[in-house]
Image 1: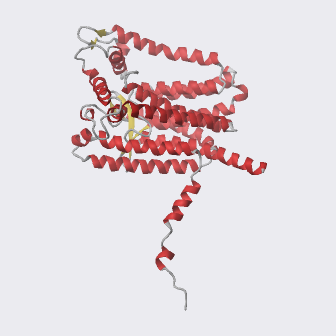
Image 2 (image 1 turned 45 degrees about the vertical axis):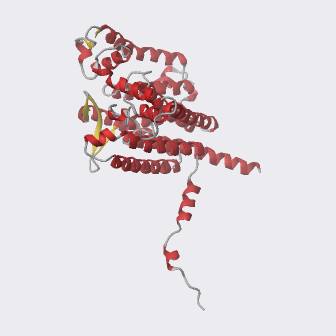
Image 3 (image 1 turned 60 degrees about the horizontal axis):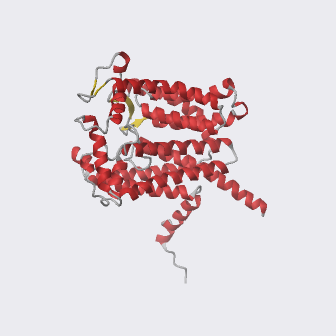
Length: 418
């Protein structure tokens, strides 16, 4: 009797086989993969909880934002997977091209991008009609190019002309192009770059000299903010000349809000800060529980810039500390990867991207608890999806690509030793 063939089994691929194939191809640091899973799950919970007012404003359901965030997470994880499958040496080859492309893109955004509060940060992509923040691409391109330059200039890194200038000029170009529309992002990029240069053995005196020059405009803004604040009306006085152009009044206003945030006045600029404080105070030690936030109905941008305040309200101090621990664990694993990587470019690249993400997370959390002035940066992998979310995923994918390479090298060494 002829053997019967199961037609369904013949034509239908084995899901378990596909799953096992994906798992076998998923390499790199398992802890970092676990952190990605944890942060994306937190993102789903908190974005769903915090988009009530946004849904009401645009006459949509909160479920629509949940599904949108879920779609972004699926797309983001796909980006991480494919980015980590690429050999990280490829990123060294495309770093220069990406950097060259990002410069005219930032210039185009400044003149023709979507304006909001006197700042132009976004351009709208045709066909898909999605806004794209060009600074996200620029900072990724910069850190890839900076890692390439540091790895190639190690033999002359102490020399000002041959070592320092080729490293600092790209940083200065990107920061100066981003600063007019987004000063806080430019400052975070500059600070991260200086940290990377210090680890990359760049001369300390060159770094300190540059920091001193860069700090002058910030000190001027600080002095103007104090001088032109009216303590009677709690408003900014008329600003002279250049200080009333573009986003300069916004920067001065944020500094004033931060300095005088403890004053009991009717300054409308304090509304967002006060609502964040109310949310944090309501959370206590263990929080109000998932979905029980009250501040989400009053706190502007509770799903993006101030999502950490919602986490503290719903999950309490315990949840807030857990989030800090997760980001620090991510940094620790990347530093460990930096020490293991035998090649300079991969080591600098993993460190640069991890510094970028963790410093951004610290800045966001610091703003939410009133440690820093309002910066407008999102919480990586947690805030509601957008171009920033996808570029964060791409950065993590590149880090995992370095980890995968290190893992393969260690495996090869073990085989040889046996």
